[in-house]
Length: 264
Length: 338
Image 1: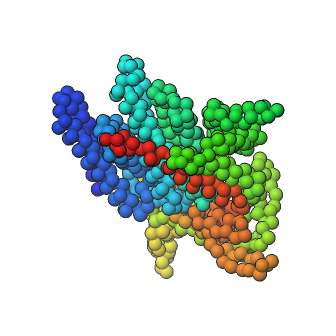
Image 2: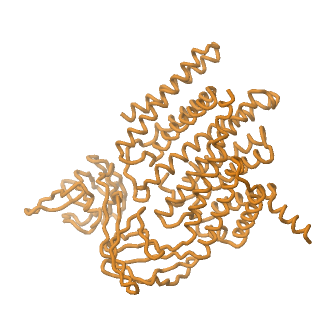
Image 3: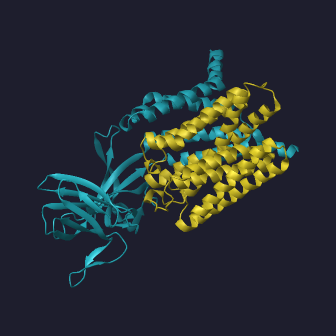
């Protein structure tokens, strides 16, 4: 059932991508509508997959790389849905869909078996800590895609081109959406560490890198809100922030051993 | 003099200083994370790093004071910056006033002091609790998960050959250069013997995991039970070949039940703790931290008294509330304009 749902989500994402490509050749809203519909179907498949796995495992399904990648893909689709609702930003479906295809492709070599949780992970803090972090990471990933797109496109177009301004503003909106989520993720993780290990901060590499990521985005927000850093400087900082996010999420597990080594 | 003071205060509250401090803290934290674990405290608990955080706190304090207000815009920002101060204050209280130590107990034994390691972990001292704690029971349970493959170590004495194999059930493995072939026939998570001395599994819980290995050399065949927790146990016809079954079942829970005896307050009561479920008494919190596989009556508890925690958690609540108030009304702005 898990495999079927995962396959269903993957196929919907691929079909969605196909219709988005088709839309570029034949400028019809019908193809775009189909692309969006399939992406929303992929979101439904992913939601069902996460809920079913949660029910079957009897615990939040975020304990290994397979589960983390599925949750990440679900979070990306969720953030797209929120931004589509708030801003009618349908074009965000294209990078969100591409990101979901990439993440779901990474799940294929992973072990999908439901594994039991070690004692340290058996906590109700886990759900809120992980889900808030992943929603935040998903928004930051989309902000990065827009920022990277901005950096590439702004070399050929004037910086005041409307499409570039939209990309810059939407990237900023994604970051202010994400920042409270990663803050809740970090503080609930700290509260959880205090319950599990008796300290709210260990300077464990994963904790330290999550703090560094938070500080990079804090620099972005201070620069943008107080010093008016927009467009290229903001896009570069967004890219740097996402590099820190990526290192915190994946890199640190393999390079710097610590209390979070079970995430390998 | 007055102008100099105002100048210093203005510099302390400048956004440029805030950004410089952000960058310096990021770089210092990164350097610390990349250092070997034993050297990390030399960064994070060093005088210069603490001074950096104090300067960051002063910068935040002056910035917050300069932007005090109750408007929607100022409230979120004010709460967020105030929260950073509260968190830093909590961290300082923790740094200077917390006590952290280890209480190692065996069933039936009690202790009234914890062992506190010094920062460099080379020396330790005792910290008296003012009451004693007795371990009544330590219990462990495991998940009923069967191994996908059996990790077997093989020693062939006459050839002085040591090999390690990960065997799937039913697959045969030749032990190279020895003439032996081994095969895993069966697995019992909870091995026991019946009254007529026949092997029988009591349950699916891995209380006594054992594998049945078929050993062949020439015409000789032997079936031998090998136990993961009792490697020396079991009968062997051929003493020339020995096995080690390496299987660590996944621990589900380990729990210590203790009695707290406080003679000064004439109190005696029982408590239990497991990972993620500490208990507290007289400002000390007891966390289940360790066990000894070789000694099932031993437990290790982390004992902490940290008056800074309340400040830090209050700061966390303020931080999250401040950010939500500050940023979320800005979301959907373009929608409301449509």
